[in-house]
Image 1 (cartoon, rainbow, N blue to C red):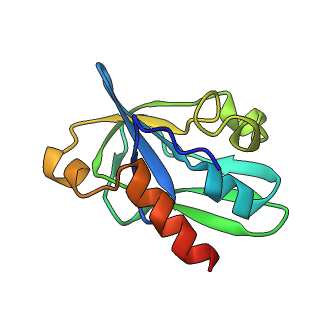
Image 2 (image 1 turned 30 degrees about the vertical axis):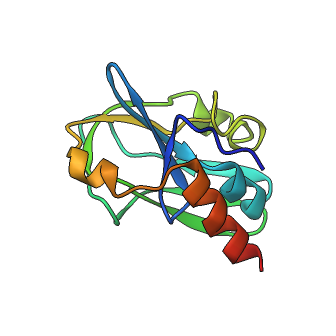
Length: 129
């Protein structure tokens, strides 16, 4: 499994990338592997407010339907508009073209509560035991 070191990770298996124009969010390599083949993605509307710890979307795979749990709070400024028509991107490139949303207005204290790559790697190792 691949966990890029420039990302922050939540216990709910989402990643956050700090960018110059906001915060990009997606699912981790572990999450997409656990889900199996993704067949449907539901994302919030631009302008929506997401709140840390609450669902903001849905991913459906051949195995299960899973809520996307917000790793941080913020305002949705962009969604990956091509993703609903190409849900397989979550399996193919979860850190690339399979990103979910971009948000703004994130409280840095929430960001600091997320795990780094090594912490997330340890969490996944514990889950797999």
